[in-house]
Image (tube, rainbow, N blue to C red; front, side, top):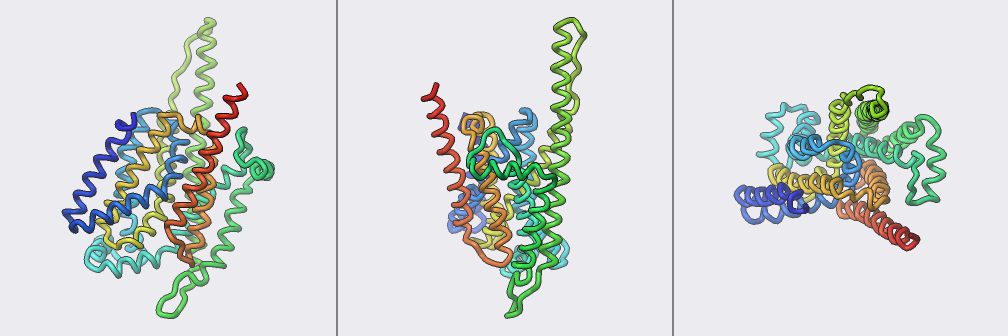
Length: 366
């Protein structure tokens, strides 16, 4: 099972390392390997969250996620996205941006760094909404009960998560955006940029998440009606009707997953510049890491890990909340990628251990 799920990740690893060596010698091998580990460590919480959504989709859409989705993840976010950032921020055509990335790597890195406030604000707000909607919902299973119970009560207030996110965005824009970067001794005011990008992240979450939730609810309603029809049919009341909205529901959940993956990849793409400013090596290393994250997501779904270790999803969402705050802080202050990765690993590790202890207690009680 393990080998079958990760076989494409292993194949992509071998191919990526080989291409790296052919492209820039043996030194590139180490750079690609480091970037791969960086991506996996920063995105482990991504795999847990994705698994919670992916388990609602059938085998066909799981394959789409692992095939078409990985193409979008690797080429879209790890290769095209940095180029688009430069093209927009420097007002260049995409072709000129690619030429700049290949011929003047230092200038390319400077332009991407200059665009970081808008990237961090967009991704930070998108991830913060995911965290807030999770923590403010009243759930049957609670990990940190003393914290989650009062927050669940507050969550009964309509649109509270949006209000909290907007307050955080406003504070971030005023605090960090006013002195986002220093250029030749002069600080650039990025307040407006941070506000616009943050609102864009908020709107994106509400639109994509709202559509996926809407069609998911429609699908559940149809399934419920189908079950009732089948029960009537068993009693002689006539045949049941097939569910017809699975495709739409799965499509919007797939779209939501891709936007979610994009938001998670922001810190990896930006952090990669601390290691190399070569977009080819960057795409190879982050692409390998992204493949492992995708395979890990499918593995968690097929093994039913989230059902066995019930607090994992909680730990991943707390890691998302921490990452959203970190992204907003990096608008002005640099934070080492090791710190970012360790926070996520520690939170998920703690939730995993809590799940193990819970399972032992249940077995002992029974």
